[in-house]
Image (cartoon, rainbow, N blue to C red):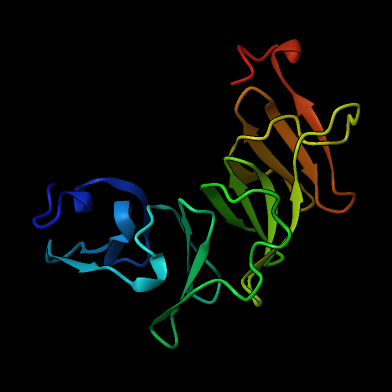
Amino acid sequence: LMFSGPKEKNFVWSMLQVDSNSIWMGCQLGYLLIYDLKSGKERTLHPPEMMGRTIRSIVKDPEGNIWLGLQNGMIIKWDKKLDAFFSPGKDWKIKIQKQAPVTDIFIDNDHQCWVTTMEGFHAFDLQKRIYIQSWLPAENNPGAISGSVCNGIEAFNDSTLLIGTLYGGLNFFNKKTKKFTHLDASDGFPSNS
């Protein structure tokens, strides 16, 4: 399946089946393709809120709003009720030490938003649209995350998230204590990547 127009529309980095009729595809340069599964037609959007940045992650919250993680670390909201895109909130990057590409967004059953980036693991406030806490590796702290390049998030149970890291193995994050435990090659994994 190839799309006509700018070649960047065919550089698909992320996808989300929004409903039974459509798939949203995040592309380079901030292009967003909405593909109609029934008709086979696509609609191209190039919202200015994307600032021409690659859309690396897409997730839907329980209210039907769509959250898009960008190459520059920003998270953009598409509000379902208003059918509009919204840039991050004021001071969106105060709590992150480095602006880095978003690799995954996860909204848990408590409606808390968690974000992995190429520079750490973060909590994100969906109402204010800002990062509120960050975690990076820390020497001599066994309760810290084990790798700075974080690539994925899944729920293990109601209080624990699994965080995949590059060269740091698998991390278990306790949402209550805000501490990490780890599994890596020393625990029998084939490697730490």
